[in-house]
Image (cartoon, rainbow, N blue to C red; front, side, top):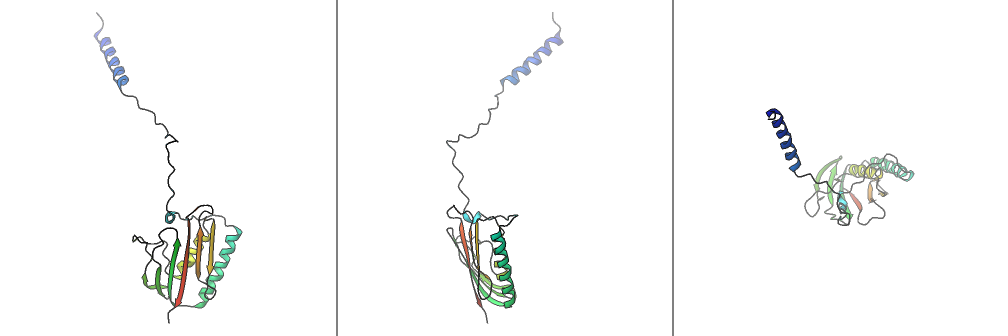
Length: 183
């Protein structure tokens, strides 16, 4: 007769082989069939934010110089009390304009600045200083086309137009600002 220890070792090994061999093998993950894949829709224009770039083109450097000249002109006006209306034009839901009264650099009253669904427009542009900050951010961005127009009399950014990608549709937007002096 055989040794019972050898037989039980053999039985355990056979049982292990049968247990491992009977499990369902994991199926390999196959890549999706490219014929069935749909391209992801582009994000809505309001979610496409230009990113800062490390090297500015000579044109953008010139725009920054003009921005600094306009900023000095604005500071020289010493205007302390004004009303500012900033509207957004775009293919998307432009919402209601920002309407603010500013005294000494502080917003006293503010209305508007919301999309039709109640979502706040961004960035919030309620003071001339905020307009200058946004103009500089856009000039320093990777947007393919940025144009900033400054008010002839007071120097504040009266228009900022952005085209994120020149050959794409519906990615452009424009900010327009109108300032009136409060007596």
